[in-house]
Length: 92
Image (tube, rainbow, N blue to C red; front, side, top):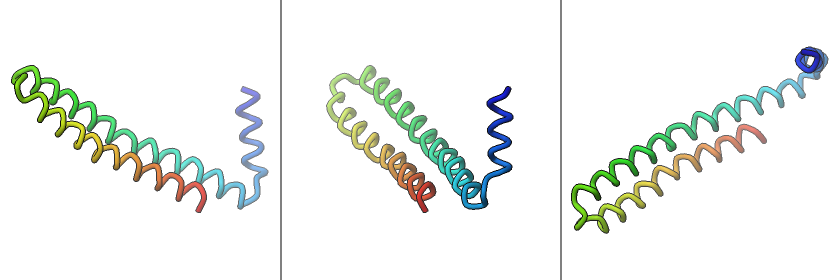
């Protein structure tokens, strides 16, 4: 509990610039966390459906795999955009 009380005391004594930096860091971390949830769910769903498609039609596995990798690349771009927003919020 002493660590929490120390953090609260430091937050109260912080200058407005330090408070702004702390708020920017916490909001940027929150934004990146939200930005990573969507692509994580999307990639999981995409890979799961691709595995099902390959299991149902093994002869089309090559085409399904190619399409899956393209989809993963596009979904992963969303996570990278979220990371860029995180960096902009952190250092702006």
